[in-house]
Length: 358
Ligand code: UD1
Ligand code: UDP
Image (tube, rainbow, N blue to C red; front, top):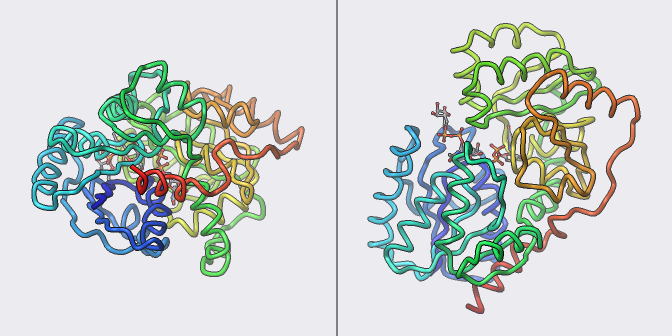
C-alpha cells in the first residue's frame, strides 16, 4: 500500500494528478493529511476542485514554530504509519509536512518516495531548503522533475534511485484548465480590464518588515493593476507591520482571499504577467496553456529551468529593481513561448509506472 502524505496547498495540487492516476489503475493507496494547512481555502477547496477523495486521516498538526510543527507532524505520522503499515510513503515538495513524513517513514524502515526531488535554492535561510535536502537523502525513490534536478541529486550522492519525470503541476494545469473555464466565475469578479497577478508568502520575505514594505511599494506602483489573492501568513504580517490599509485602499490593487485552483488557473491564464515568490507558480507559468512571464520577488530560485526557458526573471525583493524589470517588459511586449522545461503533462503516469515496477 502506498501512503500519500500531504499538508499544504501546493502538496494537494501536485499530489492530485498522482492520486487520480492511482485511482485509474485501481492501485492500493491512502491519503494522510497533516493539516499543516487547515483553512478551507488552503485545503478542502483543492480536494474539491481536483475531484480527489477525502483524506483517510487528518492529523490536525496546524500552525506553530518550525520545530513544533515539524515535531508534531513527525510524532503523529509515526503513530499513523504504525497503524496503517504502508509499503511506501510518498511525499511531494519541501514543506515541514514533507520532512516529517519522510523522516517518520525512514526511521520505521518504510521506503520513501520523493516527488519533486533535487531542487536547490542554495539559500539556507529557507526552511524549504532544509526540508528538500534532508528528504532527498532519506528517500529510496527520487522523482526529479528535470535533468538539472537529477544532476543536483547526483552531485550530492543520494543513495536512492532517480527517475526524471517532469513536474505533476503541469499535469494539473493541462487537466484542469478546461474544467476551470467551465466552472469558475472568478474573471467576472475582477475590477480591471487588464491585470497582473501577485502572490507572496515566503517566510524570509513576508516576516521581514523591510522586504514586505518593498513588495507593497511594487504592487502600488505596478504599471498594470494588480490582482492579489493574499495568503493568511501575509495578511497577518501586513497587519502587524501596519501595511495592510495602504494596500487595501490603493486603486491599483484588488485584494482577494486565497482562491481555489480553478479560479487561480483562470487568473494565471488571463493576466499579463505574474509577480510572486511562490515556487509552484514559476513552474505553472511555463505550461503551454498559461505561458506567462514571472517576476520572481526573491534573491534566488530553485527553478533555474524556468529562468533559462525565458519565463522567470529573479528580480530580488527591492521595489526599484522589480519595477525597472516590469516596466522594461511591458514596454517591449514580448511574451515567452518556449516549451515547458517541466514536462508534457505525463509526470504522474511516469511516477506511478516507477512505483508499480519497484
Ligand atoms: C507553508 C510551507 C511553504 C509553502 C506554503 C504553501 C513550510 C516551512 N512552509 O508555508 O513551503 O510554500 O506552505 O502555501 O512548510 N495559516 C492560516 N491558515 C492555515 C494555515 C496557515 O491562517 O490554514 C497562517 C497561520 O498564521 C500560520 C501561517 O499562516 O502561522 C504560516 O503557515 P505555515 O503552514 O507555517 O507556513 P506557510 O507560510 O503556509
Ligand atoms: N494557488 C491557488 N490559489 C491562490 C494562490 C496559489 O490555487 O490563491 C496555487 C497555485 O496555482 C500553485 C500553488 O497554489 O499551484 C502554489 O502554492 P504556494 O505559492 O502557496 O506554495 P509554493 O509553490 O511556493 O510552495
